[in-house]
Amino acid sequence: MSTKILLNGAGRIGKAVLKQLLENKDFEVVAINEINPYIENIVYSINYDSTYGKFEDKFKIVENSYIQNSKSKIKILNCNSLLDIDLKDIDIIIDASGKKEDVKLLEKLPVKSIFLTHPNINAHINLILGANEDKLDIKKHKIISTSSCNATALLPALKLLDDKKEIICGDIVTIHPLLNHQRVLDGNYVGSATRDIDLNFEFGRSSTQNIIPSRTTTIKACSYVLPKFNTELISSNSLRVPTDTVGAINVTLFTKLSSTKDEIVDIFKEFEKNQEFPIILNNFEPLVSSDFKKEKHTTIIDHRYLEVKNNMIKLLLWYDNEWGYASKVVEILNYYLKNIK
Ligand SMILES: NC(=O)c1ccc[n+]([C@@H]2O[C@H](COP(=O)([O-])OP(=O)(O)OC[C@H]3O[C@@H](n4cnc5c(N)ncnc54)[C@H](O)[C@@H]3O)[C@@H](O)[C@H]2O)c1
View 1 (cartoon, rainbow, N blue to C red):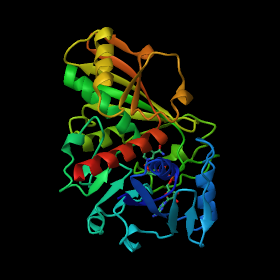
View 2: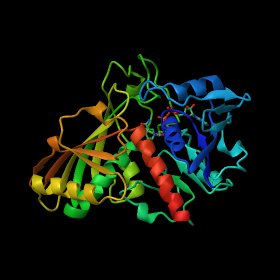
View 3: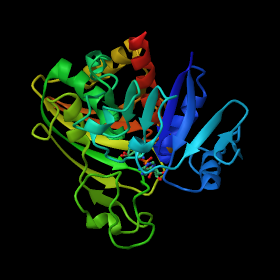
View 4: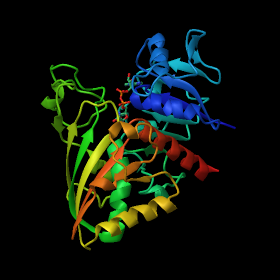
């Protein structure tokens, strides 16, 4: 029997998750809850996407509150809170709205599990494949955070290098594409449920005319998954750039054991050969960010820019922050269901 899913929030991540769930017969998305009250607009934005292109099996509206294509029929709901939804036919909720609902209230909802697509210290587990999937305990973990796109891309590489060379300290710079909370032209800062960084004037500035520096919660998100990787060990900041998707992270690490470049390349090659999930992809070609669009590997190690000097390792990582991250949400969901059976 297929797993019945309610998707909360059909924005950038919600739609990427939806389209990947629709490819899999084990899942049935029975409902989408969106605060956007216009079902015509919801169906339009599922069918047409500037970043990933048209959706071939188009949806249309049926019976006023459903959308349907050749394979699926999905009820569209318009509630402000998950707590107000009748969940009797739902097994699992994927919350991609960015709303920070009280976890104590979410725990009481009559579903098997709730997946949050943001880091959440109060979730029962923050889970990143390649970092802590062995810690998943389906008896204890009902509210599962799938962390952030940056932490998902960074932490497996950090853990691997720490296991082999022991990280003493480091610094990262995330180079992150546009997000929907940003301004097109200069304006006032607008707060957003999708960000929990303090009020930040820079985000009131035109997103298409600037490289915008900002703080990032990446390392904090890593620490919710593996406490060793915290802001005492690794400093961070971010540059927001005017591209649609695919982020990069510049990583500088100082390690207890020294290394050679060949050794580090071999560590990543060995991991790629033996991995259970598509996590590490080693790249040796002269590629640019758009070449990694729709890449499902969690993190692409760009060996053309790998530098190793004694105890210092400098890496350039790439990741698709939308489609790639959404593919991890679906993989974690699959992993969870396999553990239930
Ligand atoms: N965009 C990324 O690169 C990225 C990557 C990983 C994780 N995330 C996280 O995923 C979440 C969503 O981010 P996004 O980029 O898709 O944002 P988005 O603004 O594109 O989408 C959010 C959607 O949720 C809807 N929504 C807001 N409040 C709601 C509510 N109370 N109930 C139902 N729907 C509601 C909005 O109308 C919108 O359609 C955030 O927590 C974000 O931090 C984003």
